Image (cartoon, rainbow, N blue to C red; front, side, top):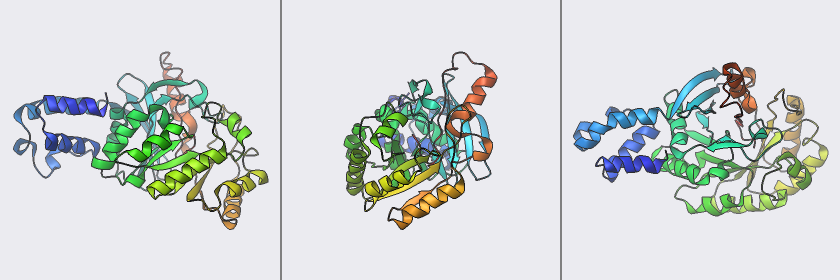
Length: 352
């Protein structure tokens, strides 16, 4: 189900544009209809009122909370079941943020991410994306939504843009607080500036070296770091918000003096923020997390050399929820053969 299907259902029940917007707004804001300024019985056509309970139940059934794993940092990792039994993770972030998933699985194949190990399973529909937000808002306020969870949003572009439009126009979320994270699919730079809601853009860079990027992100578009930064700079100037470049710190791999020189070469003077995220270690993968002292030293050195750098910690380190561990544990415990190839990726601060 996509958002357009819901619109068609509402119209078939006699909804006019004001009714349609009112009900979509109630859904995306997780607000009971009775709390709106005008009560349904005084506003909605009879056929729509009679069909509303069934439609509300269907929308609530798009996602179901399987488990909630709070972290000491104020985050909470949510394992969610979709209607077909597939599961994804959403993450409630500190400071009223939410990370959502746009795919079940991922085709990019990032070597440091469990999601990409076995490819794409299916797309998450625009309605399922909104359902993640609605469910999260039933638990706590959400004022920022980042598309940094499971999947590559550019590979599900129509559904993601449809969800972003509803969130930005009716969901009470500022456009720059909608963050589209991508490894750099060229279609993103063509399509995002054209919509009524222009989200902020987070580009997964991870290295200044084209050869290393190709090894770490083997099925990402074959753009060099220089080409990616040039496209990012153009988007930043068009939208008026800085590009967020994402850099997952992998100990001994992309935290070297050579890489620091490369970052300065690429980003000094650009309308950009570099988000450095120490790797969220996963026992099954051959990468390790650098020490926090080392990460702080790198961020400090980049600041001193003219690159605006924010050092961010992956949410929920204390619950071992990074890079699909929560979902993997759930699959291992229930032994579901039909779902056994599905993993989930979590990039709380953005790490394709």
